[in-house]
Every structure is written in structure tokens, then in C-alpha cells.
Image: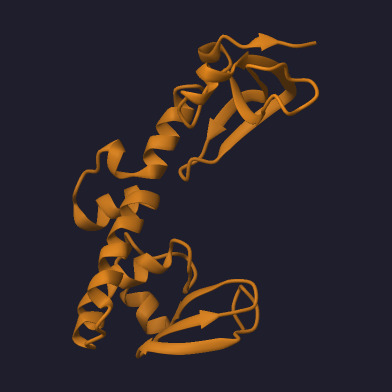
Length: 190
């Protein structure tokens, strides 16, 4: 059994490392010995490394073993794992590789910095085109909340109340991924 449920398939990639697929998710499940051998910078609390991001930690940790196993696709897998850790787990990469990353090298870092710069401001969370009955032509209807905080994975926390506004469609189209109402000169609606 895994945290994702009962495995539909489990393929041993290396001794002590299984690639598990369940009906709902999957990833790597590693043995106690492999978990203990994980470098501290890459080790999670539990020996299950999900397949969206955390699989990459296992590949990096045991790259010598994977390379020695002769998998013809390992070079591609290692490249993807390196990019994934840099983008989604930048602090883990820096601790593991002793290499500082620029914000442009990490999606999470860029997003987190964008949110951090807007803490305390009304931030757009939802947008509607002029197809919505309350949005006039040439405008975008936006909904947003006051940004309270952001965590290490760039997941924001907001505070009520929800605020509704209109902004110029062209200006909205040119925005960054995180934007505040004041940056868009939003016209607050009642």
C-alpha cells in the first residue's frame, strides 16, 4: 500500500527503488536503506516521491546507480530531473549542488518573489472575458482578494472579502502571472 492507494503496477528500477502507479497517482517508493542513503538536501520525510515533481529527487540522489544500470533513456531522465528540481525545489537544489540559482532558473522562485512583492495588496485570482454578462466589450472582469502570504512552493494565502473590478482588456492581456489591482488601474465595482 502507498499513500496514493494500492499499486496497479510496481516496477523495480533499482534494488530498493520501485516505480509505482496507482489508479489515482504514483511515483517512486524507496526502501528504508535507500531513504537513509538519500542526501539530506533531497530526502523527504516519507519514502514516497510523487511522480509530478519529487521523483526527480530520487533520480538525482541515485544518478550514479541509475547510470550504471545502463538504462538507455537515463540521460534524458537525468536532464529532466535536474530541470525539475531547479524549477520546483530550488532550495533543495542549492543545498544539494552548492549552486545558487537565479530567479529566471526557477518557476517557483519567480512566482514566490512575484507574490511576495504584492503582499498586502488586492491580487487578481480570477478573470472573465467580455463574454460574461457583467463585462463590457474591451474590458476584462476580475475578482481578487488581499494577498496575506505565500509559502515556499509559491502557493498564496488570501483574506476576504472578494473584490470585483473591471480593467482594460489590452492591459490585462499584457500582465505578468501575478498582478495586483492597482497595477492594472482596476475600476472597483460595488
